[in-house]
Amino acid sequence: MASSTDQTKLSSARSYQLPLTKVKSIIKLDNNTRMISQDSVYLLTLATEEFIRMLTRDAHNSMKQCASKRLDRLHIFSSINTNTIYEFLDGSFD
Image (cartoon, rainbow, N blue to C red):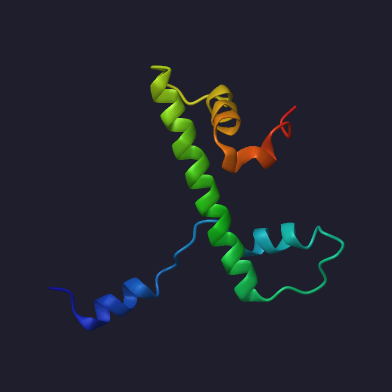
């Protein structure tokens, strides 16, 4: 059974993979953004990671349907074209 100190260490562990400083610098590329709180950067990082997970999972499912052993751009494009949640990406890779 885990002790309370072990549970504290687990809960305080980093829950994101993308570097916050890189995400913040990308956000600041927008001329309309002057200041952004650290909490906002953190939430946008988590949302971005979840989006990448979803797109990758859908592309992987597309790969399995094609009986392919390697994930390719075509599987990502197939996911974008078949799922309505990715409509905003349609045409962005042309």
